[in-house]
Length: 376
Length: 155
Image (cartoon, rainbow over all chains, first blue to last red):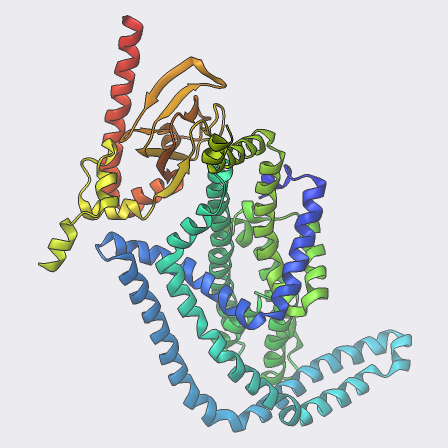
């Protein structure tokens, strides 16, 4: 996309950034539909190669789509049925666990602040360590009353919406080609080939992003699970998976993942501050590897957008739609850039516009042919 | 049995596709797969289908009407060929990204089916059997056109 980006003019850039902001704003209003749709796209791009293999083995595309989407839905329902009883059985321990880890985390921060206060006189006046301790304890005590119910309600409210994802993925697998044909049919002849190319480029960009992000999550998860396991942090599998999935939220996600791991390490190994530093170092190393090795290798350099623009758009996305904006801004920007570039090519191509105008004249003449004959 | 009967039954649309020389060796079931990839377009007489030098993305099959292949903007003195029902043009686009070698205009109202290059490439991956038949027919057709060109120079 970088090579393409150099071809985009300043007016188109303004249009691209404006359209991206507008789309984020609109999507934020229908997040209940956008999130399952994005998950469906991810599922579609992951299942499409399998679907192709099934078609190659002799199944119809309809049957392949039904089998794959059905299998995925069964796996999801099976996993929910497996997890639900365990969640209910352990619900009582949640509050005490959360309080324990929050307390452990606060103790680490308190120790660090205390150390800093010993070295810097201006920090001593603020008495930050005591204030932090009081706030953490207050939060932990009110956790079940204020936040636990809300969190459970949010998960329950999102479940039906999330179950839409395999259904949307099924229709994308089954009717993706028909949808593309339908869109192409609405385009005038002069722009037809360019539109086909645009649809292909959009498909390629989205596939690169979603499949790349999935692979990146798997790589991050493996790296973190092994790293935490080697460091001796408890529950490395759960922590690594949660932190890798949180990585989908740019900037904030990896920090939250790191904080979670630090809280667990600090609580289960109190007084071992070197372990906390090692966990922070592990997450720092992952960040560097992600930026310089994994992302260019897995998502590809084509998908990369200029770092300054990426940073700017993260701020804009966050300002418009919060965490949702942070997550949506880059895939939307990538897709809008492809559309913007293609539209610029079309509108700058005077020959295509002239051909379209001529075709319209021909259509008008054909429609009026018998009327003109009568006039003569 | 029902499947084999329906498998061999050709709808009018499939029969029209069968009339295209490139699809003459393709089985009915395979033709259905190809039909799923084709885009249908209609052009009025004198409408430009594509220009010389334009980036080619697709091959066109003539279902009805006629088209003229000529040098850019020279439909009279720069005529290269006139093609009719069952023939195809723009086939080089399936092979490379090279610009179109000539302009194509509709000389009659025509109805065309279009196969996008990326769909053809996907067909090679998913239905290599169909793609190999198509490629062979395409090679035969291009060989025939080359032979005609050489003969026209010799004569």
